[in-house]
Length: 134
Image 1 (cartoon, rainbow, N blue to C red):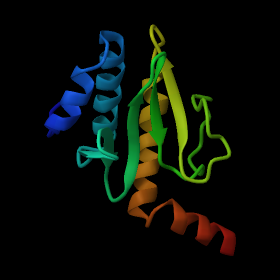
Image 2 (cartoon, one colour; image 1 turned 180 degrees about the horizontal axis):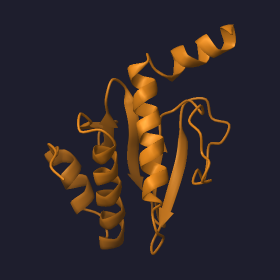
Image 3 (cartoon, rainbow, N blue to C red; image 1 turned 180 degrees about the vertical axis):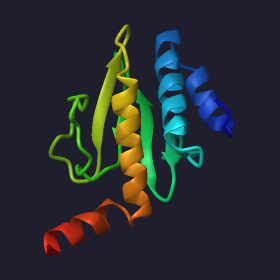
Image 4 (cartoon, rainbow, N blue to C red; image 1 turned 135 degrees about the horizontal axis):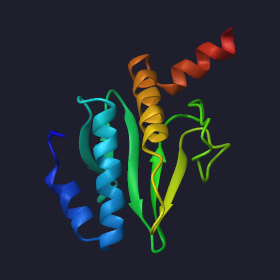
């Protein structure tokens, strides 16, 4: 897969233990696979973000896992039950991956694509407002 990699994101990933590097690289590839127009950046000083007309997700490596923060306003479906935290959060939910766990790539790509579609439709805040009016 070919995409423009932000060297600051490379530096963040390269500084991690190997198992976290592998998770971050796979998630990075999956978000770019979801849409080739996805861009990488760094926000909050060091955290990798993936954006397209709004935030899609961010990576945060913790001691025992890697968090993937999904910026969806809790309106993206989770039929495979991969969300691990933030179920009632209004701005983001989390999928945590631990060493040795397999990433459900089709489920994660589907969520990324839905978040991107929501971003292109004006963002999750606008969508929630419109839903409340109906």
